[in-house]
Image 1 (tube, helix red, strand yellow):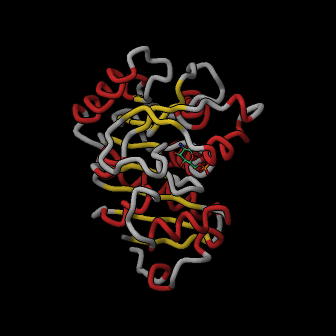
Image 2 (image 1 turned 120 degrees about the vertical axis):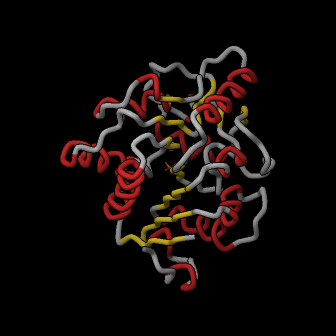
Length: 251
Ligand code: GLP
């Protein structure tokens, strides 16, 4: 694991965008796994800036998003489809056919989950997967207690997740209670993983994930076993991390 301690959110976002930039510069046909939530917003802003100023092209890139609420329409401003277009895709030269997000209105859920897995395989697998972390240690929408071995599947959201995400909705009742999410197994198959955490509310989740026991109750703890994991956390989120993690050399 490589660990990068960022001074603040701005630095975290810049560093993360630089990592994606390098990935794409080295392999223009990269397959990127993308995340939503508040954490990667700054990274997407930085990426758009790099795209404009340094001519980073997304034209050969394929993207796979981690998850989507179920049921939700693409036009719903709370859908992750909408989020991705609003915050990244509308600004860059990505080809719409290279964008993959689970269909939040799929009639045949199982079929949709299988199709998603097949598309990832057809694309040659994910080169770099970006992850945020939930306050309860979830990644994607893989909630505590789900089996580690799951592929893309339908998830019942935790109360804590519904509550945490209600800030984006008019009320808590409006938050969908289910989602389609890549499974832990799908995530772990990515060649590289970039985990981002900022703010004091993530302090326990990141501590448990990186230094706690590896167990399904803390889904992100499985990342300790990934051979190519980079973590970028800001000072607030890193408060409880031991110095052996914080002092790891990042190069
Ligand atoms: C959401 C998403 C996750 C995200 C997490 C943290 O529920 N499904 O992919 O990483 O919650 O969100 P935030 O970055 O807003 O704290």
